[in-house]
Image (cartoon, rainbow over all chains, first blue to last red; front, side):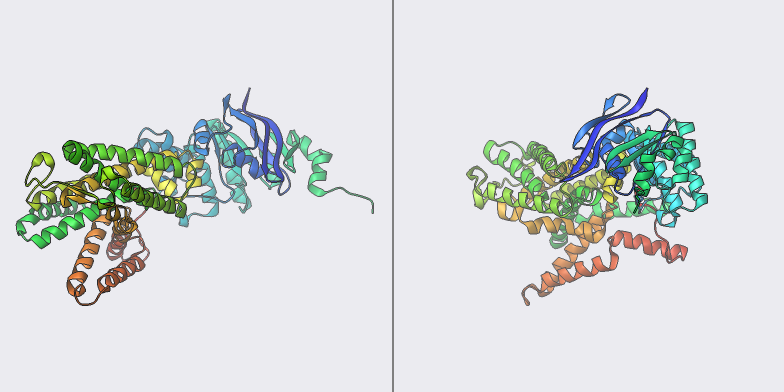
Length: 241
Length: 333
């Protein structure tokens, strides 16, 4: 039973078709890697799915609930949450308060929001820094905080936009561990846009390849890695001069 | 401050506030009423301008809605202002809801929100000026009844003092309540980064509409109070954009994150403005306004976040000896 179903999603910016008739689905608990060359429409796909860029056409649903046309906060409320390519913490607040803002829409009280936030921070390993200011966090911590916020907001599906970019190898391992932990303990489903091929291939159950906004291929990582169309899209066509 | 210091501080404040009329000085009383009214309207504005970060220049619409409703009902139908003020506040809330529909849903933020609310206030002025029933450009006079509790008229200014004092306390309590409620957390998030807040489920438009309506509610009650206090009301001075600016300055100068900000700002501005007028008003034309402007600029330049935030920072620095010490996150205010 697919958890997230996307059908014929398109997003047009004037004459540019940034997302072109994209159809796919993700099963509950799956990790779907979304890859493609720069400008393939990955971030636009995330923005459209979460209501930040209104889709030009197409439908998508989470657990049978249609989400097209809803504003971002309602899509989050339904359980589909994105993180941003460039981290967007609330700078003047502490780590805990950041997660509390994310939890508050589904909390019955401020105290309840605090509990939900603490649980989320615990899952991503930020409990020790919950009273720290955002300015004192490392970039890896800030990315972990983005995941904690998504988790605290009650996400069933998290769309991670380049959460590993700019991290050292040890930090990438930590992100991978966190993703697996969230899936294991919270049954969270992931869509991850990532340029780090090793990590995304190791982590994903399936890979969705976008090129010029359209779906080029979808399948198991091992199959995708050998797909000539994918290799061509990334490396270009080898022609005899 | 420790718990005990806080209790002592608030007790002293209450004694001063309640005992002030016993000084029996008409000038002090009049000035304090003016300062308290300024503080009250600044607190009303601060709900939407400070807590939600939406720079309203249209709160005069709600002040006018309150003032004109209670006055019109009294003058035309003899309905007691004690009832009229609530009718005015209700109308102001409806207006705020409609303006919110127009602006918040259309994503008009920042400068655009300020400009739209300013334009609507100008429209309100023109509209009222052309309504004979509301006295047109001449305005409305409330018939003087001496001391008549049902007509909300009192010969003694002390009564007005206690009414506006209670209104300031009520507005400060409402602000603090909002800050400590769930919606306070939502406002903290959306004020700082609206997209990030929406991404994690904060109902941005609903939160803004709520505080905008509450801001309008308070502003309208204030408008009715002022009409009863001066027993006169006209469109030009009610809806003037200078009024809108005057009522937000105390929050900017004093600080927007704690109820004491708009109150301290209001008293500072009132004292500066009155003493400058007393000293130079008769001799050098325009100098009082220039002094007022310079004080506003200096305070804003020196303190950024307002007097209260600056004071808290200095206090912490003194106590901890840490030059970088800053009161941790504002959401726990």
